[in-house]
Image (cartoon, rainbow, N blue to C red; front, side, top):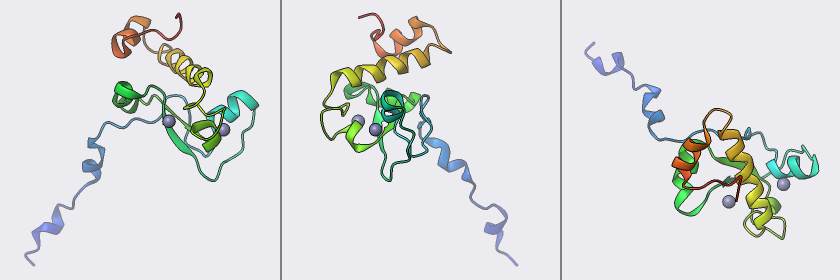
Length: 121
Ligand SMILES: [Zn+2]
Ligand SMILES: [Zn+2]
């Protein structure tokens, strides 16, 4: 036998290279963060969408830090309650996320990372 390649199988370490963090606020289990928070509705949705809490130029940081939640379509992009149409709900997520971050970091660290403070404006 001279099949040395089999002795060193490719390992899973390759998978971990990208900086994708799990949401720090919400388990990806089919529930909608806002259905739960606003309506106490813990139903599992057939289709759930990932939402980056701080968008635009901060989207990359949101991805790397896990600043994201899972939303049903009507809380994400469809209709008046959707965060992309509703500044109040958008802001609610931004405030919740900053609070969650500050459980393990200081406010200064948050401001340094994001460039602003969502809790006192
Ligand atoms: Zn929802
Ligand atoms: Zn979104």
